[in-house]
Length: 414
Image 1 (tube, rainbow, N blue to C red):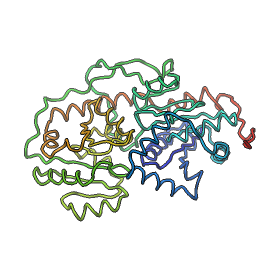
Image 2: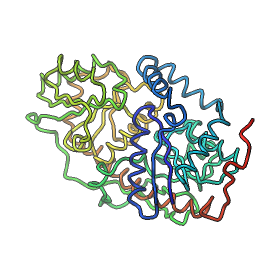
Image 3: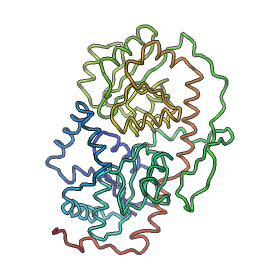
Image 4: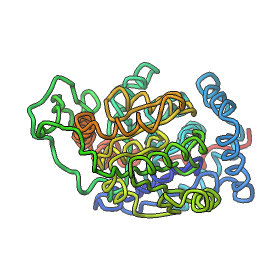
């Protein structure tokens, strides 16, 4: 079974999720060729760089406009160039000899669904949602399966008309290096929270209760002599909060309390050079493929509440701090993290002080509570295998069930 993964570089989260899914499927003998394609690069090779740079500028400099654009997708369903793009999708499916498509960006789902409607092709379409809140752009007819990040995501999909038997709660996928050291079930007896991540009526469904987490020794305050290790990551596009204010906060924590601060700038060379010049007290890194190790070696992660970063943190068990989330999807993610007790959120940048940050860091009981809650979530989202779900759906839909494709059978001249 050959799988085509479609994604886009609007922020690096979708790309990271695609890498994680490709990695999972590539290691499973039930799947043949698994390949990821940047949907925007493929459709518009000559202007894709301009499209992405325009998006990045909007995120950095006009958050309000970005949020309005996202909100608009919940109210209208406008797909320009449907005929042309459907023709391109059909060509890509034939080129890759794909038996199924996984969409890891909203417009990919919409356009593949339109392609299926236009052509009558019954190729299975799976949508992997990379945020907790599934705005309407993620939802499309002719979608055979949705991979949801949480039970809340599942419930919102159901409220928007998606059949429960098409939703699989798998968590948001992250790469193997974040998960391989954490495959264990908490030892304490099940608690009161229900944890059925499989679709209703599924052969894999088994209603059980989610354990409350492993019991640990009584938490105490961290010794004053302990030097807390703080990791700061801005995601693929950099932190959206006030950089100067954050830099001053971290510098004060280093100077007054001896904290060790590591800042990962990614591809933002300008930000890296600025920090190296103005804040030599920080350990400043550019792009690194050691993020999982950095998370495991740190006591706290200050970052943007993107969906991928959130689940990378859950897998590594590092407590989270979010400062002044702005982008609409990140606000939803921050609320999810706060509600589940795995993050401290300062909704206003004025709320956080060096003293408040250190008080939070040295609250051993609070830190351990966050780690237990993350263990709960790891157990919950580890119960459902995306590969099993894809295999199960494919056996009952489309080409693998004797369905007949009509790729190219209909005219695109409308």
